[in-house]
Length: 207
Image (tube, rainbow, N blue to C red; front, side, top):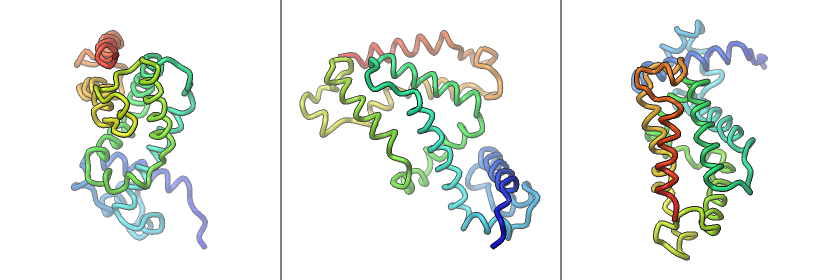
């Protein structure tokens, strides 16, 4: 069996991320990737079954890395407000340090591929986060969304995610050049604005 050329694989994956972000899923092709990476199309199929498999592998790598980042600093005993603020800061940091990966992850999240492959993603972060949120409701730090005792069985995940993180994601979408610090963005999305938005989110999520 031919030994894996890790440098070649990394180059292919980097080129794939760049092309996917630049041209989208519809404009991306294995032929374009082969040309950009300087390899033959046949070489790509040594590592990936097809275009969808390549996208899924890239997505799995990014989600796994993201989950590890979040769990590394997680403190189960932390107050809800402190933990949510940590989550916001981690997202901003990832956004600034890995702009290409951030854009790619958002593309997948808003595509049919996300729903198709969600069940194959690492579940540790989602399970831990849900346990933590429900404990925050028990402690009286987070609204039960009017559901009372049934909140544990009928927790509105999509509503919670939209309220807890939606404002941050919306602001970050307005930053056109993700390679620059937020304070240099013409969209004027800076740390102070993020703090103000976070204060509004916490106010809305309190009981």
